[in-house]
Image (cartoon, rainbow, N blue to C red; front, side):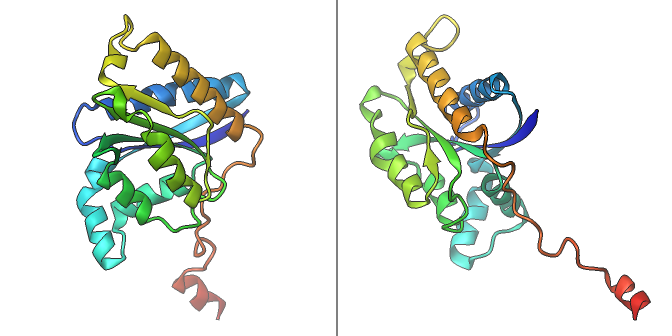
Length: 206
C-alpha cells in the first residue's frame, strides 16, 4: 500500500468555521476514496488564519519565516491538495489569495487539487469556476472536475450535511483520489544540503 501525502488549506477566519468544516468533510471522503483504491494517506492541515501576519510580512520582505515556510513546504510537497476558501465580495478571500501569491509559480505544477468554497447564500456558487479554477490553472495544478460549494443551508441535513452536498463531496473526493492514485509518490522537495558533511567531518577528512 502506497502512502500519499495530502495537504489541506483552509482559509476560514473564525473558529469554528464552515470553511474548516467543509475541508474536514472533503478530507475524510478523500482518505476513504484513496483507501478504496489501495492507497493510504497522511493528512496535514494548514489553517491560514494562523499565518495571517506571517503572510503580510512575506509580501513586503519576500521572506517566509519558519512557521510559514513549513506550511508552504507542506502544500508544495504534497501528492494532492484540498483548498477551501470562504467567499468575500464574490471571490476567494484575500488571505487565501495571499498564500498562493507567495508560492513559487512552479511549485504546484501537476499537483491534483480539490477546490471548495463556502458562503452564506447559494448566489456565490459559481465562485469556484470564475475565480478559483483560473487561479489554479495559472499555477498549472490539476483541479478535479467537481468543485464543492456549500452555503449555510447545505449544513441542515439530518447528519449535519445536506444529502446533495454529501453526494458532491463523495464525487469530488473520488475524482481527486483518481488523480492521485497511480502517480509517483511523493514530490516533497529534497533538501539540497541534506548530504553535505558537517564542518567537523570536513576537518577529519582533511
